[in-house]
Every structure is written in C-alpha cells, then in structure tokens.
Length: 297
Image (cartoon, rainbow, N blue to C red; front, top):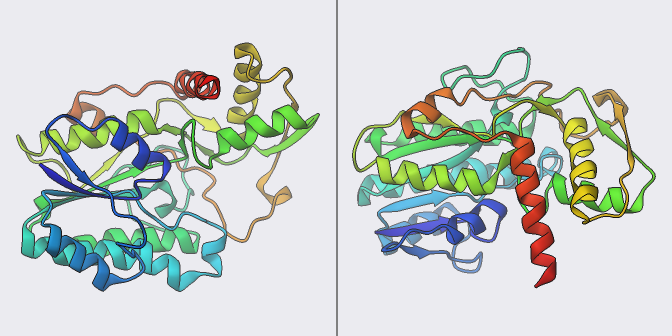
C-alpha cells in the first residue's frame, strides 16, 4: 500500500510515521515538494504518485494568526483538501482528512455529534469547515473520503499546550489559565492508532463520512495546566509546580474567538473501530513519561 502523508513533521504526522504498519510505503514530501497553498501542486502530486491513500494531517493551525492571514489559511485548510478530492476522483485513491472541534460554535452543553451543523466562530474554524464542505461537494464516491475530527492535540514533541505549561511551571510562581473553555485533549499516539485502524477497516466495510475522536473525559485548559504541574513534579521532570489561577476567557482576550464548549461525541467511532478511548489524564502521564525519557537520550 502506498500512502501520501501531509504534515509529516507535525505532532500527529510524526506519530503516524512512528506507527506505520509493515508493508506500507509512505511518501512524506516537504514543503519544497508539496506546497499546500498551491492547489495545482496538490493535484499534480497526487496524479504523479497515485497513492492508495492520502492522510492529510497538514493544516494552518495558528488560530489567532488566521484572523489576519485569511487567504493563506483558506488555501491550506479549504482549497488543498478540495484539490486532493479533485485528484482522487481521477486516481480512485482514498482520503483521510483531519479536522477540528473548532467547526462548532460551542453554544451547547453536551458533546457534539458528527452530523450537527457547523457554526465556526473563527477564521481558522471557518477554513476547516469549508474544507469539510468542499470534500463532500466535490467527491464523486463518498466512500473514498473520511473526515476525522479531533480536539486539543497533545504529544511529547512539537508546539503544544502541554510543553508550554511544563516550561511555565518550571519558571513561574503563578500561571493564569482559562477555565471556562471546555473540551478534551487528544493524545497523538491514540489518534494515530485510530487513523491506521480506519485505513485497515476501510478494506472490509463502509465507514461514515465523518468520525470523531478524542481522549476520554472532560477538561478545561485550567484542569490540564494543573495536572501538568502535578504529574511533572511527581515524575521528577520539574522540581516545583506553579500555582495555577483560573481566569475567564474575557480576561485573556485573543484575536480569534474560541468555542466555550467543544467536546466531541466519540461513541460512534469507538463502537465502529472497537477502540475504547483512554482518559486524558492517563494519556497525559504517558506523554510526560515519554518526554522525560527523550531527555535522557
């Protein structure tokens, strides 16, 4: 099996490469070979390579910067998946596209299901929502595309909230963290497992066009920040933990508006793939252990 992977240097992309099953050939082009802001480049890459699958992990993920870089974020998050769809209509390849909880507005207090109406609040969310819409609009065979929405991706590498908090706990006495945005973190290790399981099961049966996956449980950014401090000190990564102070979103203004509640309902995915999500705090511990071990090398 031949797979085209975008975003291979990112958090999820690195984990997908790490978990690659035997017998699979992955093409992981850099930006100099595949420019996601250029639809023609996307189409040409797929037509030349003719992969069995495209795993599209790449995205313009700078949520606040997307408020001013609207065109660039849409070229990468909307036009690129549309271009991949146009190409796979010719090659009959399959597309696994990673999307986000930010396609919802957060104005409910129960987990979002896959078929709920998209109402993004930010330009980033709008670009990801449009990407989903264009895939559905342009795909000739709906079975050739799967959208996997996730949230708050965390890992022992790259740029993410966990590693930022780890550094702040070691340097600061007090940290102020937003406590009124509710969702759930997602370990890249488990998310990558789900990606490979989707690809495997697609050979055997039909799967829904949209799936959701996150770790189990519910959290605010404040909850996660507190847990990072506690676990890091317990594991000996940090000698101290800062006092984490809860603040409201209005006390930490950002260019992009975030959903107040963006928990995703993962029941359907869990049942279809026969995978039970692990609680986010347990996965957080595993991430911090892996981070600690990586520093010993």
